[in-house]
Amino acid sequence: MRAMHLPSDHPLLLRIVDDLATCGWSQQNFFLPGPLTLALAAECRKRAAEGELAPAAVGRGPSQEVREGIRGDHIQWLEPGQAESCDQYLNLMDSLREALNRGLFLGLEDFECHFALYPPGAFYRKHLDRFRDDDRRMVSAVIYLNPEWLPEDGGQLRMTLKGDVEHDVQPIGGCLVVFLSGDIPHEVLPAQRERLSLTGWFRRRGNEPF
Ligand code: OGA
Ligand code: MN
Image 1 (cartoon, rainbow, N blue to C red):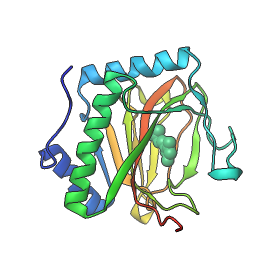
Image 2 (tube, helix red, strand yellow; image 1 turned 90 degrees about the vertical axis):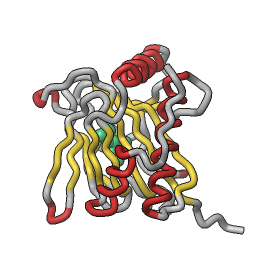
Image 3 (cartoon, protein in one colour; image 1 turned 180 degrees about the horizontal axis):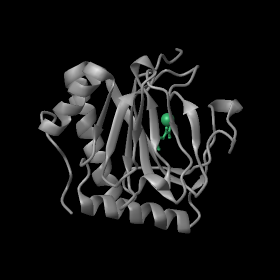
Image 4 (cartoon, rainbow, N blue to C red; image 1 turned 60 degrees about the vertical axis):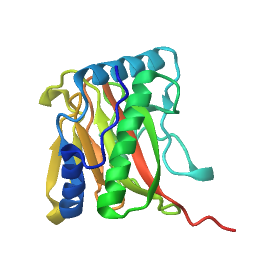
């Protein structure tokens, strides 16, 4: 696989920027190339098999705790330099970060992301991706890694849009969903089979105390 970078004026990135500006969210069903989707799925499964994924916690700081009645996924945060497929993905997300900064002047400085594996029966109750005491997360980006998925497999991402309209996304491999972290409540419906994804957040600089 070659280095995966897109110019920040690539039509695919411009479409996402435009969708975010007009609606606050964007869905691109064919964002990730097939081979990269497969490589990332394999990497996620490998890490799961090696016991590197841990039950995800809810909240931040000292009040953080694992609560399976709220979210039942297992996660591992990504670092650069761990695997070629992960670095390709991080490069793509950096291209998207540049495009968002150019088009929307968001001042996004970094990107944090994790693999997520929902075992059968797991879900994530309705929430916003912004913490009460930390508003650095501006834009959420979820990429799905499941080679095939049927509606009866569950696990849809359900977003609550303007006017309380609900929009469901099937977690099908290669699909990218991007939305404004503070604006769009969303949930993951119970998955009937193992569901893999990469979830990340573009962040602006925080108001650090001096
Ligand atoms: C999250 C989340 C959505 C998804 O991890 O905060 O909402 O579809 N994930 O995996
Ligand atoms: Mn979320």
